[in-house]
Structures are given as C-alpha cells and as structure tokens.
Amino acid sequence: MTIDFEYAVCTAAVGGSTSAAASCLRDRFHIVPLPDETAPLSTQPEKDDPATKSEFERLGEEPQLPLWKEFWLFVVENKAWWMVPILLAVGLIGVLAVLGSTGAAPFIYPLF
Image (cartoon, helix red, strand yellow):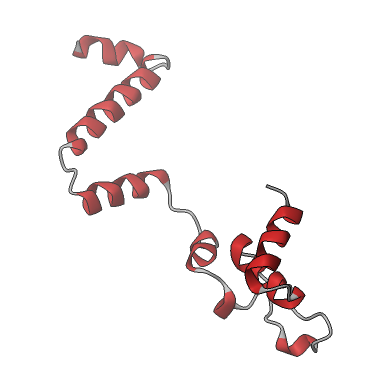
C-alpha cells in the first residue's frame, strides 16, 4: 500500500477534511510529530539530562563488572549452585594446562 492510497482511504473516512486525513495518517502509521523548532532552546530537554534518559541508557553508562563477578552474580541470582563445582574444575584444568607449558611442568606431572 502506498501513502497515496492510505491518504485517499483516510480522506474518504473523515469526509474530505485534509487536516483530519493527516491526523488519520498519523494514527495509522504511528507518526510522531517533530519537536517545534521555533520553540526556545530552554524548553527542549537536554540530551545528557539524567531525567530524560531511559533506564536502558542509564544502565548502559554504568561500568562493566569483571568476568568472575558476573559469573558469581549469575550463580547467586539464579540459584545455580550446581555450576560452582563445574566452574572450579574447568578453572583448575585451565591452570594445570598453563602451568604444564612452563617450567613448573616437571613438578605437575608426578601428580598424575
């Protein structure tokens, strides 16, 4: 459907009034009018004003947590305590793999 067809439908629905047809088009396409550019700048909200920011924007500006802290918060908030032994085992295997390629390898091999 084109805008011309939609405009004709809206014009026919409201009885030929162009302002009512424009209002009908705004409602059908969820068009938000632009802010008044002639208004004084003091009435328009600041982009960096914390009061006008959404919760998503405010949370995006917070500093990121370290990886280990994110895992810990995930385990605590979701009560996924069964993941703790798995994460410890994976971490221990990772430490042994790193130490196995260093000068500490002769001291690690007798453990197995």
